[in-house]
Image (cartoon, rainbow, N blue to C red):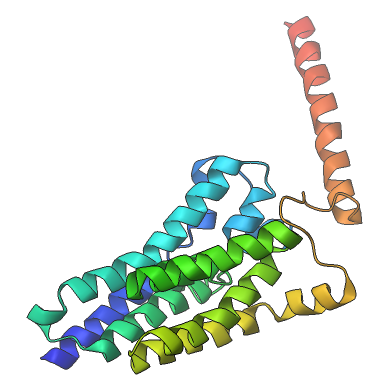
Length: 235
């Protein structure tokens, strides 16, 4: 029965992680799909490029919560349901995988930074805060979200091993860190070639396709009032 509970917890954590709040929040607030501009990553940093700080903050908080809540619930009910550190650890991994490969969004997810932070805060609050502080310091110093994420990912498993005697949780943190580095491989190339965009940068308007879309939109906006005035005169 313990195994049934554990597998159920894994599945529910994955489904919760599969809620892509970057897409959901953007749609509810009437913004463009974050998968259509900037880095095309459904995450808070890319949502910020839409110009809506409120949408970016909401995305960040909700993505962190979907990592935190499943782990916190499993830890809370661990005694009643017989959960050990192995189940707790991989519930966190399941929520993280849900963000990376969301079943509700054709398995096209984000890079998992906020969700991983939520998982770490549930595992060990001080560890989570330390990793968040690392991200903030690097991001403030260099204004590269990807560099801050890579620094935090590198620091997390070593801090877990050094300060906490929870080997299965440390393994889970290491798995998430490696997956996060893998998801950032394009950013690593851009960082090395000096082409990585900084936090707060708007989508590149020099892109020819984007310029064409703006020209078409302006033409429609110019034509629409003329058409309306012609209909008014006809009436």
